[in-house]
Amino acid sequence: MNPTEAYYESSRCLFCYDAPCVQACPTHIDIPLFIKQIQTGNISGSAKTIFESNWLGNACGKVCPTDVLCEGACVYDNQHVPVIQIGRLQNFATQTMIDEGSNLCKPGEGRNGKIAIIGGGPAGIACACELRMLGYQAVIFEAKDRPSGLTVHGVAPYKITNEEVLAEVDFLQQQLGFEIRYGQQISSQEDLQAIEQEFDAVFLGVGLGATRQLVLPGEDKKNVVGAVEFIEDLRMQHHRIKVPDRVVVLGGGNTAMDAASESARMGATEVTLAYRRSRSEMGGYDFEYELAKSVGAIGLFNVTPLEILGNERVTGIRMIRTSTANGKVVTIPDSEFEISCDMVIKATGQAKQGSFLAMIEGLELDQKKRIVVSSDNYQTTNPKYFAGGDAVNGGAEVVNAAYEGKMAAQGIHRWLESKQE
Image (tube, rainbow, N blue to C red):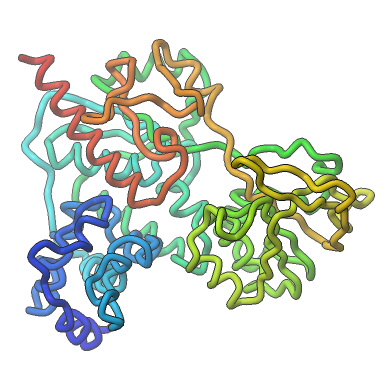
């Protein structure tokens, strides 16, 4: 949005007293307030309102599924009137301040306490920002050479650019002064012990791992890739990545929708989104599926793969039709068929960081290998460790990770204060 568009769009807001959009936002941004501040020309105040609730406010203005969160709850939706474009207004206010390099916030008064943050994704960045506002030293250990986790490496490129994500992190780092140590792979108990000795508390924002294996015949063939890895390659290499003519995407979640959308946008002439259940049981948002269809993807439901065909390179995939009985997927006998394709993208979920988490003494995981935390402060069963993001929630939105990182920072603050008392 330009300033004129933002002014007119903000003027449409009813500034609801009990705004349902606020309740629908995982970070509970005061949406009527920041929109009113835009409408009255107080752009810096608007951006500050946003960042005080969501440290990744600029990125979330673009990558959040606003259709099912804040905008989906807008009262205009019940009146068949176009809803307020909250995400675009949020991005307008924050981007304006980032571009200007304005000083919106500063660290709190210095406290005794130094916290290590393992993982520089949305949860880790939000945790570091909140800790600095509370006056603590915060050091992020990031295995890769760039910050912001899946916001840089795993969000479909058509939603947000690397430059926008990195500019927001740089803006926050300049404002608040947290440290990021890149290329810091924590790979042994000795590494963890060194961190435990140097720091007063540790936040785990490690996210999830690589795409899970399907254990299918032919899965090792060339052009069989994981969706997360596929999108990361697009984000890191851009135009150097080429997509063949015929692509099959396996999965029904939002990552599958992103992979299908990107494949079609990059020139694939046939993009098939294959899911083992019905469309109504699909985990991805309806608007994401409609977006994938709008750029050329085709949905194929109630099918599951049996074998990936070809010699060294993919030439097709053999599938069988399915049905759902008592909530379980069952295959239909004698219903096998083949689809010709040049690439198979597996969007079938990510593996958990089990080997890494097993190195932390006393850390409890649930049956789904997620980190068990206390709901009020995000402290793990090892009291020195706190956690948030995908490793805790199993894989949610950027906005959820930002909220959990912030809440964990406040939990760390209360825990350290109680120890000093």
